[in-house]
Length: 346
Image (tube, rainbow, N blue to C red; front, side, top):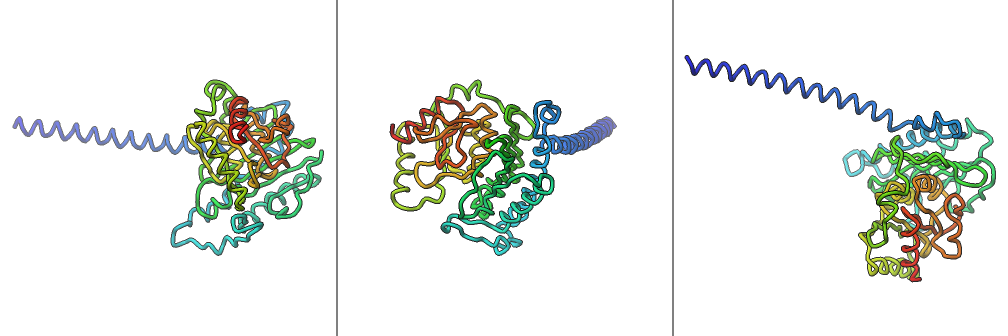
């Protein structure tokens, strides 16, 4: 009888624990779903600080840029989701080479740029657009004082085509011949970066830290240093780039990285995931669409962005020449100077 009593008590207690666990799990699930929805809404919208600001006078352009970047990013997910599965069809990408086999565009690059450009001109018919795919291998149009959008419909096209997640949509906006606003969306990491001149930079709605704390004191020997080898393939260029890396390793750095997306390189330096990025040792230099949006995000997060070449290093921040083939950007000015001297052997 006593044994039966204890068995009954244990069964009731176990049932109560089970009910409590189920209720807790349900509550947790509801909280998770709710927070996920609110987080998604918060992450992928323009921060209220910018919308409410009385001095941010590119709100319409900013809201549009965010909408277009998100839509273009969504257009990339079908290929990403099918890559390496039975649903994959590489023929859908319609890969077209430009300068060489390493430099190419996909049909999605072209679709994204056409979509973004058409939507911009619907709302701002008097604005100028400079796009990577519309420019192709031709001469890049000059940047004037007219309101100008600089677009990279997919930065990191090789990563995208290969199914590697580090690629993004980059939309920059210039006023009076200088970068003013930048929006970058990386669909596979679900990160939206926003920067507006004089109003800070944000990742998923949260403001990025300025040059303070660890960012302010970082030195080259403790840095994650990033570079891209680009499309340079001849022997002399390869030797120059390899020598720069050799100098870094011999000097001593925490590590080096090559991610395959110049725009994300700048965004990652802006948020302190990496400490310095450089380009322009040889023929691997970047183009205006690689710089524009990322420059605003980096500068607004307190980074130093300048030219790698000592003859141009006085042009930094918003005075940076978007048409230059060399650049260096770091979390503080000291690490920029250290890295420049090291890779150039000065």
